[in-house]
Image 1 (cartoon, protein in one colour):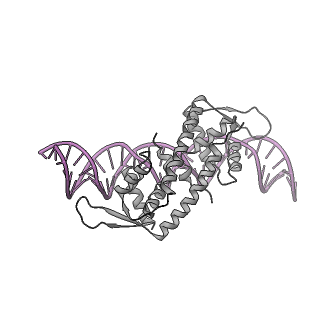
Image 2 (image 1 turned 90 degrees about the vertical axis):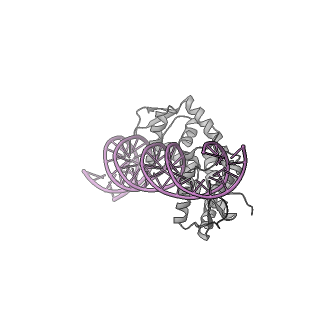
Image 3 (image 1 turned 135 degrees about the horizontal axis):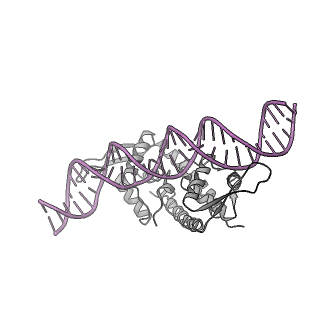
Amino acid sequence: MPISADILRGHTDTIILAQLEAGDSYGWRINKTVAQRTGGAYGFKEATLYTAFRRLEQNGMITAYWGEDGPGARRRYYAITPAGREQLAADRREWEQTRRVLNALIEFEEG
Amino acid sequence: MPISADILRGHTDTIILAQLEAGDSYGWRINKTVAQRTGGAYGFKEATLYTAFRRLEQNGMITAYWGEDGPGARRRYYAITPAGREQLAADRREWEQTRRVLNALIEFEEG
DNA sequence: AGATATACCTTGACAGGCGAGGTATCATGT
DNA sequence: ACATGATACCTCGCCTGTCAAGGTATATCT
């Protein structure tokens, strides 16, 4: 069962930043990594992915550069900025809190 | 730190259904319960809450009835339907998967 | 009379996801 | 030579859930 769009909404930027924390990467590769890391349960739609890159770049969370010309289709690489790292740290704290809150709200069992 | 709207988006219906699973309730009370249960970290905005009631009712997840006329402002009670319980069960499974996926995607630590 | 708490409702704007469409390179098969 | 599929990028416009802002009404306390 894939995860619904609304559930993932708002996590897109965080996921991308987390992948970039491990090193510069490009759109297609990030998507493959995400799919592989989740056992195919989740992958960005292309429109979502590239929209997110624009947003993150505009907000100063990432910077972009074209990869060295090699064989194959051109690649646009992205790098996380210091502001991006700060945002990622904040996002991780928020995720921990979200887990706590949602567990309390949807998994409690009582009369 | 409050949890952002986008993060909670899509969980609203689930949270409401989970509260109603414990017994019929009404909007204002549900909101108070949610706020109390999360230590004030989260509460629905009224427009969000009542929009969700309409949506859930339209989808057959809940039914509504006006409370017995007592003192104070009138209350509109909601009850979860069998379809609502099924939806809630599915939502809980999805939440478990979401937890797994997001942990894998934003909390991993490697080079 | 005015403030506060309880309790409900609607309208319109906003933002993120994404379906649908497009472009280009390279390898492989026929 | 041509088709197919994998790699790789991009944009336009729709859809949907959130919520700011506005409104209504009852009961209690000062």
